[in-house]
Image 1 (cartoon, rainbow, N blue to C red):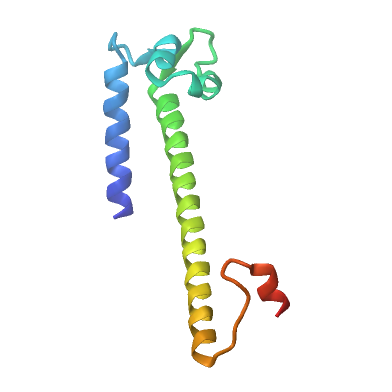
Image 2 (tube, rainbow, N blue to C red):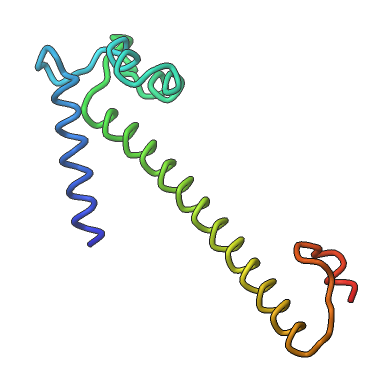
Length: 120
């Protein structure tokens, strides 16, 4: 599954490069990259512009830029998923604790009062 995702990403990156390579010469002009990707990628793009001063980005640099941005997005999504899972687990524990307290007749701190719960 992972190798299939990588192959799909590689194919998508290659196709995107071809669509941005308006001259068909194997390079994308830095200005065109800014137009296509916007200012939020300005620093990233400038780091990978061809070092010979032609303000051109070849396929390898383009693939590197896109891959790094995809990895950042995946990491952000993964972090959000982990945070949601932790919050869901905390809510489930709180509900289970409240249900157990109700079943035994012991009243704990109000829901969401983590400090009071630690003290009891």
